[in-house]
Amino acid sequence: MTDLAPGLSLHRRRGIAWLDPATLYRLLRLREQVFVVEQECAYAELDGRDLEPDTVQLWIADESGGVVATLRILNDDSIEAGLRRIGRVATAPEWRGRGIAAALMRAAMDECAGHPMVLDAQSHLAHWYARFGFEPDGAEFVEDGIPHTPMRRG
Image (cartoon, rainbow, N blue to C red; front, side, top):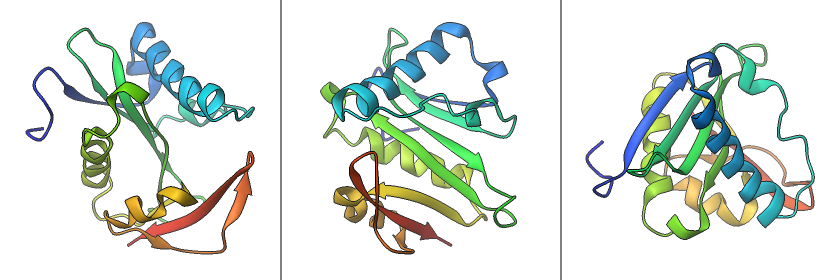
């Protein structure tokens, strides 16, 4: 991916069986750091969806292998044929504001090309997801004390 700063690299794995334990630990640690610690949301981070064989993990790592941003893509065919759900979008605080999450979202959209996509955006970030063609798709709801907006693309 050419729009990443030198020293950063994009990675993709389908199914966590193909992740080495240290990388899996770094992915989950970043998600916990952002959602559980920083945003003070006590929720079931380990929800079983990462274990699904079609789940795709995308992440950006620095030169030392440290995960600076991550997201996952779920196959939600049981809800709608071909539906893909983007979630657990997280960037380490010290890496925010550098376009890293945008690069990750572009990679996710490439991964999901030809499929309808949904996500539940924290409402204060709905305008950010709109940059990628997502539109509100339902009423705002509160999850873990944070307002969210369901959004859809395609």
